[in-house]
Image 1 (cartoon, one colour):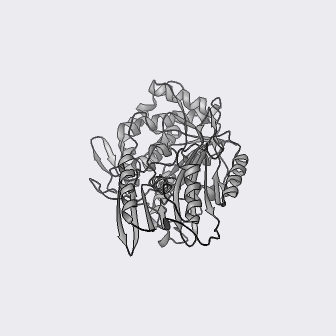
Image 2: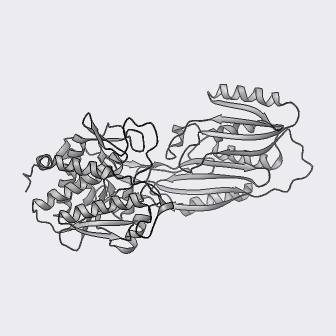
Image 3: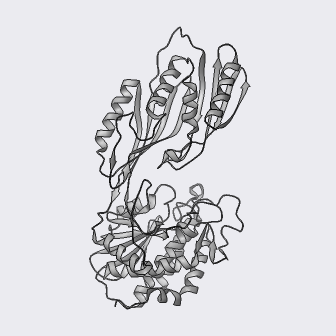
Length: 471
């Protein structure tokens, strides 16, 4: 059985693989809840893509199942245990600036260009053809093989939530929805707000009163824009001059103007993913830093000093007393993704905390609550996605490592990340491809593509992996 030429098996089916991938990519499966129905709760396009895969699988002799029109699966083989392959057919909106129709699936320079080409329709079809090859070769298996097809990965993961409430959890599995070689560990991800308690103030003495401030819309992004409205006692020019100096000193762009007697400042930062805040320039935190130079009204003083002290100078939680590092997933990080303040209501900040797999989260939460309480803030809206980690000596990891190394001739380095992949939906699952080392990650960008030769190579890797895991 070791003499199977996996890549040759894929080459025999290459034209069908490409054609089926193009047909799936032509379906505009963007979330459309506003026009959802019972038969298509997340929109007609999303449901069409799910049906496309289930019908294609049925034609190939797999057993299909639709789970509440939110997810489904295709299965073959026998046995008590299941090898799961977790894919998704929903895509993010196409956006502007494409060189060709984002749903035409045009082939140019050996690449298929379309929204969803690399995330995750191309890899889904690669895994489908991998299953097809193993089935058509009639290889003896002791475990069932099941492709689980999600439809809400790009938003709220309602697909997998619903699916695993109603179906078996695979014994082990992989998600072809990230990078090769193997992502075996992912940090925990917690989102929460620090909300300022209203202060009772009277007879204040201040030079600057903050009327309104806002920056950032998402917990998991570094804010790239901030705006603030100020009531300035005396001459605006003192504040404006200092603002120009601050921008020059920190190499930032921004503007100022007067509107109905209020001084309005805007500032541009540099956005980055919240899993590594240091890769960006947080416009909101820079605005906070600038404001701490002035004598503010009491409510604002409390808010801006709190934000600057605990979040303004570093992203590792050292000032808060929660800094932590482990050898599996590295540092705890905190991204300040949302900041807002009004003179009437006070302020709040929305935080995205990525914590290592060995973190004692309850201990961290206690420290955060204590700091908040001492400074007049409460923690609200706490949500948590637990860390995900499969031991490097696990059968799943070792098997995928062996397959990858045999087929590529390269060492299968184990990767740990601060982001979250679809694999964390599986009890024992890792992210496995499709992006090969050195390839640019163009998911969610204009002119998204998948390289056809890479798709062929990934299909061969997936086919051998399915066989080795299920035999």
